[in-house]
Length: 428
Image (tube, rainbow, N blue to C red; front, side, top):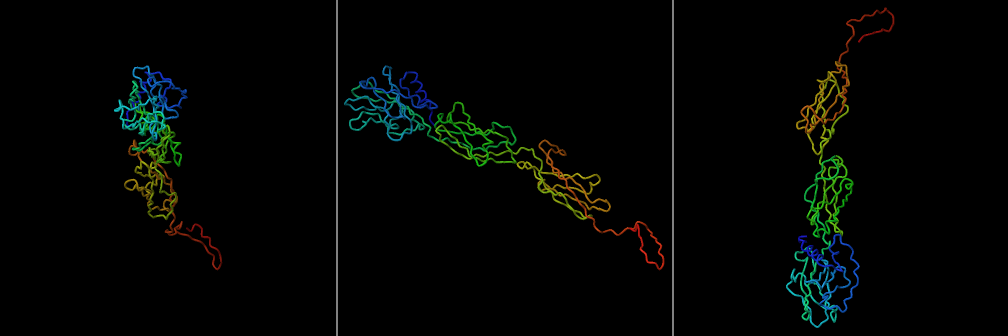
């Protein structure tokens, strides 16, 4: 609330120190507020105005009058009345049955007459007792509506009845969650307290903020990951902090953005619900991930071929450029090469030089394609993050060679006029 409650609190403490009451109404401003005590019945028959000018009104839970002490030097009738009571409120019955009409002295010793609107009227109207009635609805959060001190006078009575009316703050205002900044939490970090802290205000002050609690609701399991904890602010009860705690480590790849509803409950409870967003910060810990790769390529010998391959940063929230290199079997380094496309984000071209299968006498080749990125502390040529893909190249034989005899000259003897089968061994 915008009003400094110190005047109210000081008044209660001074009165408590000065008097010893048989009927103590201070429970109405206790935090937390207990149930109304069972005060003993009081009989005011035969007691004159000079000893007890104002007496309690029966049957009201929202008004309480402290025991009057006429022996004190400046006797004061202390009355507690809750704020926000609808309609006129009789706060005391005047212990006077004379012929004069009691009056309220204006201006007040403390507070403003017009803001309180007190009147003296008979209840019931015809022949009833005089009552002190408040006609203006009180709002504790409105400046000047926390405390009033004024006098009630009767012309034929020497004692002037001084009234101290203390307006009791009730928990009638909703809390307000002030969520102006995003919450960013690194993944895979330690559980517990985070740097995400938000201010929650409540115009009712300590009676509300001391008991503030927060609840998470979502369509997913966000309440298993987060807890919202109240942190009191020393010397300030109009506000509390709502701190985000992590219950188990977050995973950017699993869920980069947690979106859920947060409800603040005060002591009544009044509520306020907002939507909260927790952005999970990607921490570099993942190698590149292949998105375009092959296992086998088969084509004819003596042809030059190129194949596109591509990997992306496994830490997609960081998205570093990806580079490529290959590993081949010994002696085959000139047959294969790879070229990273400029920028490192569009993949690479895996190139195969023309292969003469007949010359190499080999048709199956094994190559490893390696995608890598540099970590923040890496140096050129030494990468902490890489992914290997083993691929197979199969070269088809092309029928482009003439037969080659094993010997320069072949001879065989054939008998004349004889049918026979010729055995041409080692011809080609």
